[in-house]
Length: 261
Ligand SMILES: N[C@@H](CCC(=O)N[C@@H](CS)C(=O)NCC(=O)O)C(=O)O
Image 1 (cartoon, helix red, strand yellow):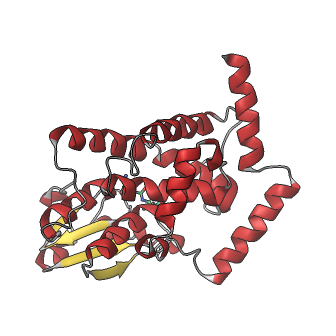
Image 2 (tube, rainbow, N blue to C red):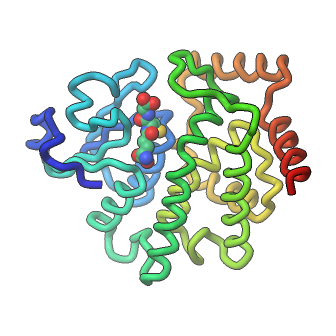
């Protein structure tokens, strides 16, 4: 999404030439954009914003993205937000002929947009999942999962939709990789890290193993610095001690779901 120029109060960026990305190593939305850059073999000027140090809330950064979120792309002084829009913009303007990851027909474009919107709608649930099962929310900005576990149901239904699509094609949109696969990969990866039983959607599980092995994808989903990996390991162990895991909550959700249907 092209941000209205009047909202860009950190004016210096409007003079920047070329491609600049504000991003954070461990941010799933940032990973999406970096995977596309890897796939297209395009370089960019990197501007790390450390979310763990709240750098996204500085006045300087809020003057670039008033929502205080990464990623942000600045291209020749124009500010673009929303990761799914950013990857479409980059592909449209920078992919070499024959190397685009955009679909070619109108109906596929519509399919891609609908499924990207679904991915975007689940972002809040992804945060809930992350802070419930993977990392303590030390700043208490995101509520942990509550007992209704509806967010698990929303993931289950979305993943079932993807699994159905994969019955008749090797990738989510067609017979080759598109932006839709890049967009969904980071959600699938986070679910996998949190312990979601992807094997309940068999086609999706083998598709996920296949795309996770691509070096351009694999290098973006590193587990982060040692102190964070340690904190995550301790948090997961504590969760297990207190009987909280996504696998057990998933079973609880399945039981609730079976009795209400
Ligand atoms: N819909 C946005 C979501 C962006 C978003 O939520 N980014 C997260 C990182 S993945 C963020 O910057 N969070 C900042 C915060 O938690 O304060 C997109 O796809 O770009």
